[in-house]
Length: 455
Image (cartoon, rainbow, N blue to C red; front, side, top):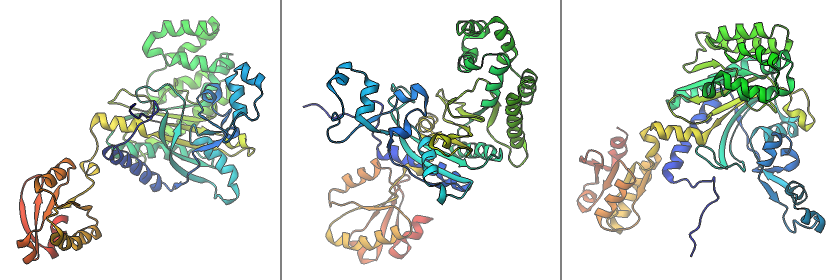
């Protein structure tokens, strides 16, 4: 008989893994709440009308589409089937798809519930998303995103607060990170001043490889992408950008002196970086203005962010940016927003690699009562209830089996305390409390059990 399996790029999570994941979600949730964000949820599936065309051609290919229920071929002719055009067929056979991210469903939510929302609306959302991607290390087909967005405000104070949230979350995790920041307007300005507005993606992709392949190979790649020698010459001070954040911004401002949109991007970036230097908002994390950062060119219009772990080789663990008209795709133009998304699965891998989970996270049961039989069970049940009422996670071993087996169970689960009550203890209204880490045992009166455990 074939063993059961799960789809590639998906995972089962054990109780220990779930404890770790919940630590991640709860930490992020607590920090979002500290900044006044409210939680929403949206359905796992959306109409394809909502999803298609929002992530670019590549994104459309990575959408998991859901076959119409019933006879999904009812509207498909034999000619269409014989043509074997997958995109055309999926359009005829599928009306729904699994969500690809949380941002587009959020935009749809805002448009649908506009009358009920108090603007600016600060929402967070922690739910799984699905992408028909090629599974590899740190990249899954089903994974969680932990998003926070502010819509209905153009203020750059929102960007500053999102950077503070990122910094606070990673401080709590104990992960050293580098926050990279850029601005879509700067990228647009660069393409504008060198006369290659249509080549902005090629330019950023080539610049991004500078560390790996060197300046000569970057320039060669730009030639292959169709840029002229004059355009490549104009790009040199941009490609070789170095120095402090302020120095880099000064250099880029000179390059973009004739681009209104480019200078606006420089001004916005300078404001955010200066605000984060202020004594009370100062970040513990390193923040770098990085011109090669060019994430999500389809809907970002202003500041863009990306976070890398400094001590583990893994892709971006958080990202986000400003979008000026995301709700415009659903018929509500002019509503600006800015957001971030924590990659919970990659953060999980980083915390595992660096072994940064607090010990308390991995301990579920704190107290186990040994089961010696019916009379003893009747004696310990009120004590277990008392412990639980005091917030102590408590189990009673369900079967009156050999004590060695019950102790092995406590050890295997890492339960720190075991309570035993036999005839002697029962006649003296006591229990024997054993510390499983030190091996120490003490007799405790039943009225003092909770006090002994809490101390």
